[in-house]
Image (tube, rainbow, N blue to C red; front, side):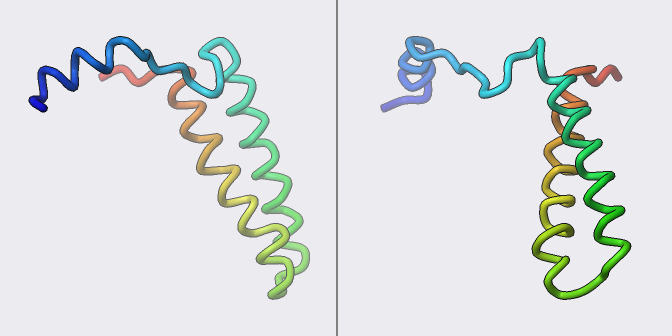
Length: 77
């Protein structure tokens, strides 16, 4: 199968994002706010248990929130 055939076959099934473009700003802002709060809670009690309960979710929320905010506002060069 050539690349052109794969390209033509992919046009039959378009990509639909999990979060719609109109709500990416809200989702991104909410995730960044949650990351800020979880980071604060992690800073209050830095133990091995709080890494799993606050640190990892805060890192994930910050990562996904930053990506959603970048997608929502756009990147202009």
